[in-house]
Image 1: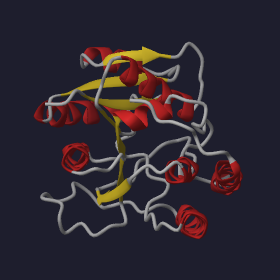
Image 2: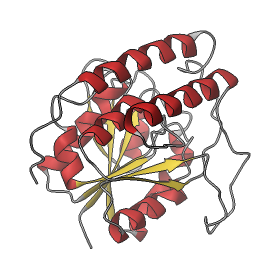
Image 3: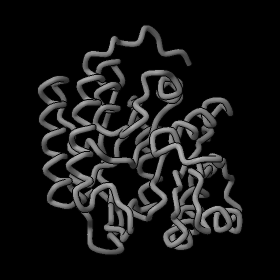
Image 4: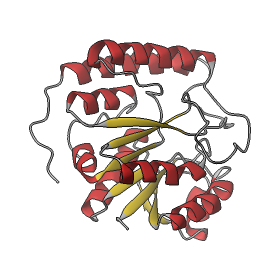
Length: 249
């Protein structure tokens, strides 16, 4: 079996981790994957819950944001010789049963990046969802449609879920993600554009995503408007950025 790591970015997820971690551990055992949580200076009981569940943890001493948090996991995976990495949110939105599906697609195909999409047909998923599926708030769905349009116009590629954080990468991609081209603020559609510009092979597979109740969410209130503006700026920067010269293994 290839060496595989599943990373969980964590920021104050004490309410969600107890239900997520046992299910995720079970799925990771089925593919012989290790688990790493990257704790972004949580001030609740997240760290204690992770340790109680015997999860390996890297912790930031101060809050660095989502982009830096996941890149911390990428750098760890690359430096420790992992062949594949899968990232799953710590808030319970992503169904951990879909982790082996992403892993299988990475193993069986020539794709460098596998994106879990909530918008593809679920007919081929071999199990039923646990609760009603989540497709985003109205403002978020508008943003997703706009990002789809921009990616199709600029990169000539249709990506159904350009804001998905449920993704898998091979080692070549991990090396690239550890570099300076990684967008630190909102690594969503702009990261996909960067992949496409640098000739990485992308594929999407259907996954289940559920609604989560978070007090401070990026996609509640007026935050989605600012989010869409910032991602459009990041997309423009990603589009004009020069192509990387090499992708070392």
